[in-house]
Image (cartoon, rainbow, N blue to C red):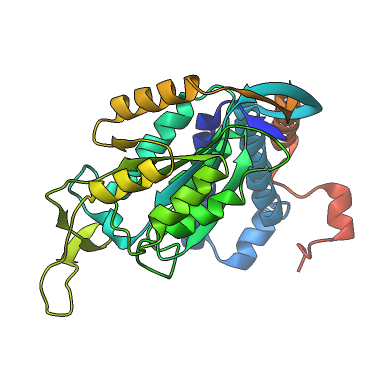
Length: 345
């Protein structure tokens, strides 16, 4: 396991293409100037020890030096010890709707991005709970299994989009059924399923499945994103709206937040429905709900004693800089005799 302490210094790697570009420009200028001064044979007699290979080698060495120094500033850290720690919490699965209707912009910036914001903020306010993520549309897809790695969860969350599932529609029952496989029956943890959706459920079985999940100890909470007045579904290319989704009759489709469906599912799942318009209010309500639940102790493995590794890159960077300083652009005597690079041809 590793960590990168100062990722911003990766931008320093941008110096390398600048060095290469300057070298190429200088070589082109030198070539043009020399051709005006004398022909190729005369130049070879005037400067017999000049080495083209050495010039290229100096640029390569200098680029390696800057790369190593940039990585030293980033300061990679390596976990040297794996510890098993005791944690208390609740197992939470987030089921995020990624159907096309989630592209509607009746809530800024759009329903899907709003859903991601809500889940991210809820995760940021968790202490030691375990979390998992499900993506669903016409089918449900396991995105991330139960874990305590919040950073990975947020990374997977940001990668979710409406093109990740080929089957369109909104089958909330599929997400509820899949969530059952996330929880370990051997561990008697409190189990929570949080469904984030606009409530356009294309299945009639969701309430019945939610009731079954409740009987298995899974409490279901629903968060509605969108507006009850609804909005069109934009069809974009490179961020530009080209058109709006139309039905078979050529009419623009208006998708609306269906709060009644989400409330019914939450009631059947022994949970509550929350309107997702106000992020802070949603986070606070979820926090209060989770705090009121009994916490279960479980084990989690995590890396400890991360050690800095910058010194290796710093050492190599200084070595390459010194090598570049003492590496001359003229041919070395004994290498010239060996003619390894056919420089005498």
